[in-house]
Amino acid sequence: MTKKRPKRAITANVVRPDKVEIELPISLKDLSALLAIRVPEIMSFFMKQGMMLNQNQPVPKESVELLCLHYHIECTIVDEEDLEQELVAQWEADEDEANLVWRQPIVAVLGHVDHGKTTLLDTIRKTKSPVAAQEAGGITQHIGAYVAEHNGKGITFIDTPGHEAFTEMRARGANVTDIVLLVIAADDGVMPQTKEAIQHAQAAGAHIMVAMTKIDKPNANKDRLFQQLAQIEGMLPQEFGGETEVVPVSAVKGQGIDELLETITTYAELLDLKANPERAASGTVLEAKKTEGRGIVVTALLQDGSLKKGDNIIAGRAWCRVRMMFNDRGKPVQVAGPGVPVEVLGFDEIPEAGDRFYSIQDEAELKDLLADRERRAREKAGAVEPHIPTDYAGVIKQLADKQVKEVRVIIKADTQGSLQVLKAEVNKLGNNEVRCRVIRDGVGAITTADVNLAFAERTGSCVIMGFGVIAETKSRALAKERGIDIRTHSVIYDLLNDMKDVMGGALEPEERENVIGMVEIRKVFRSSKLGNIGGCFVEHGVVRRNANVRLSRDGIVLWQGELASLRRFKDDVREVRENFECGIKLAGYDDIKDGDRLEVFEIERIKRTLE
Ligand code: GDP
Image 1 (cartoon, rainbow, N blue to C red):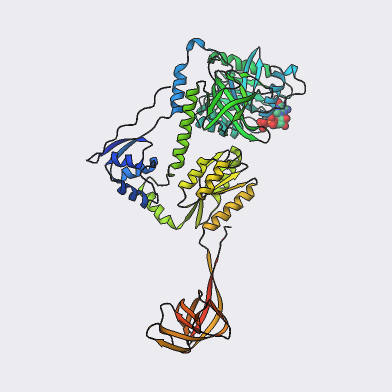
Image 2: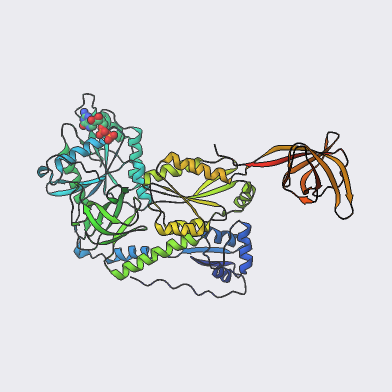
């Protein structure tokens, strides 16, 4: 492990620089020294933007940029390299060419809906699984990826739920596929989603081959499909002198399956795919979910090295000591090699689909990584969310928007799927007075890092919503100590209603006036010491000491306000009822006359709800 880069020595500049390089994270104090702007000045600048920071807190990147912009300092921001990035670099550097051996290709299957993707995969699975012959009763396990065998060589198929998911994985840096198998039905031809899939695959730089399915159908039209492909850039079929392999198949009749697998293996040979099964494992998380009985279940695709039971792996924020592994047929395995998908049990948190994972064999390195992970989580929690716009138009707009209340929410859910739905629904809540902002979301239990973040956001309302997850005992304790509201639900509808409730609480309550009595001033007593006191009679209802009154004379309202005192004989009282006499002094109004009338009312504050 390389040593961490030392922090740059920061000395107080006497002259303000017009150009700086800032390495993140940076505390407000260090930023002050670097920019030669006094700490209180920076604090006051951020405060004007609605952000409270103490001098030891890290300043968010956007805020640093805004500050520099304000002081006309040109800044270049360098994010601190984290241990994980170093690990990746080291991983790549450590590869020894001499140990590389053939690895099986990884094929992603894409295509228009109903063109026969599932049927084709099922057929391959049933007939070409390495041990299918020995396993009676078919294969029921579904892990989103599985291995077929052709002439003694493996092929891994990834059942991509859609090309968006394929691209999303790629966007997260997980370019796992060697080949894209595009499924196009011979009876239907190229459809909009086929074209989209081609664009996505081409954008990923993947080699595309075509499985022309449903050739057994009477209306199958091979020639039309060839023509259509020929018109798409980069998809000219080999039959027309191009490079795209098109293999006709019928999944229902089992025709063309061998030819398809042969085409895949032949092309894979050309790719010269290599990996080192002797080294520690690395790969990509394909799917991750929390299940009832088995806890967190992760489908991991090994891309290099071998993963063994008991290995320690790190995937994004999650850590795992591999407790159990299952292959694509649901059988427990002790070890899995390059190109192989496995289900892994033993994760402490749910990683995200697309996260790279690495097996760490050195205990000291593992400790370092875990500490680094904790530190980053803490920093993230301690840091104020950068809700400062990065341009002045944005700042002005934000100030103008100040009337709008914002309820911040941290959402934790059991699966990525439910999280996506919740985020979309929660973002829809709100009106022109109150809106909702998801400041953090994730899959897994509510952790102390979540509570800390909510605490950092406490200047507004911030609530933590859990869906199908629990809050760890220490998170609950911390939330209680810090006065953070944690609400957990298992029904989306309930969670949304609860969120509406919270948002309703942020709305200014509606004020309703209830008239509770009418009083006549029958005789004014003048006192040089106390001012004018009305000798009153409660005509009906009641007058209360803390009520409001409206004074009218000849039917015209002259004043409205509160009572300074309410007395019966010499005693201060809280209320006087109908048909009784009392002495009233008004707060801040002395010009009372005999015959004036006081309408007594109370203001009821009614909590509003969000529709
Ligand atoms: P997907 O949406 O792409 O996964 O498509 P499916 O695999 O669910 O297939 C859609 C329909 O086409 C189903 O009714 C299948 O039985 C049918 N189908 C799929 N492959 C073939 C095939 O090779 N021949 C025929 N005749 N029908 C097929």
